[in-house]
Image (cartoon, rainbow, N blue to C red; front, top):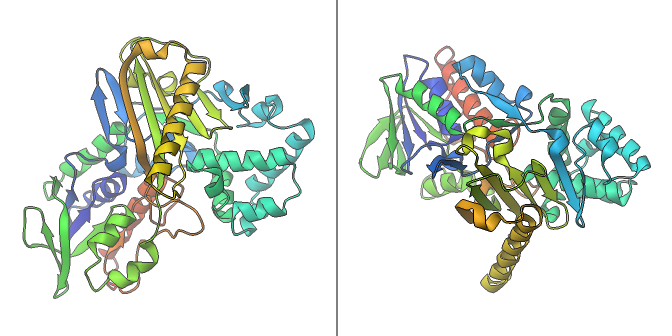
Length: 441
């Protein structure tokens, strides 16, 4: 069986790594960029390791990566963010972030009575009996909840922080999605960890797995332009080849790219429900300092302006040269503007607020900058997980392809959904070697 995997991001590499373990299969990973990793791409600059996306993992002890360690023999280290050095800033007042029971008791975000209620809600979520899962959206739940305003604000802010979205979008996230997410997170003994060495630690090992099988190839700078089906086979036209033949095709790209690839085919109509999906985009402000400017905390979340700064180097020492410091600021962005002028003014204000946050807590940072990278519109997830969007299933009736990626159905959010959907698709294909299935099943 010969398999084409379109997309060399986390999902595509995961699927290929699993499939290449089987010596009866052969295949090719097609990646349009000059490097692998997709939005998890990592690069070096002046001794600093920069990521197109934070390499933080939520609940790593309950994460799909835990299964991949066992299945594929991956070897990596991770380090937990120090929960005692995570703070919230509300109207310039700093207080411990309510990440666990200890910090909940210490935080000023909630009053004593509100803390009792919030602890009760956490316990209900851990027990999988919280009412939130029965509501269409967080907004519906909050509108009908009798909780105090600060408790409602905290729920909204937590969803903003974990889903990288604005408060208005946080209200649109499915109650069931939130309940499942926090059920796993609150049960985790390691809620937030960084992969030491960044995403390259994972992607390099996945690539090694693929390269180890001589029947598998990785084609960089080789976008797939068209797919047709003839006599049960798939004919792919790429940038450099007119007719490559495969038995199975896995599309591991953002949903928007999958829709575009198939828009002039007989299968396009089946992707119509997913073509208007919006993506999660943020402003990312990376700063590499030649020295440690200040380390008042490891993470600060500005509740007022909806942005945060992570001292990445406080948790992952590998991302900086000796004595250096790497900060990553992220601002949540709205996407509904009347015109380009309004959008520009909004982005200018976000930049001003972010630099103001650096000025306040890292005075003198401007003189210490060795590396600076600002992305005004970085994609965090190809499908924003709000009720008006739909995650793409791994299989669609009448469509003979497999789909995986962070915009597809899978376990968890963000990077985990990419890993889990890639793993799920690969296991389905491997199962066909034992029990063949119909192409459209």
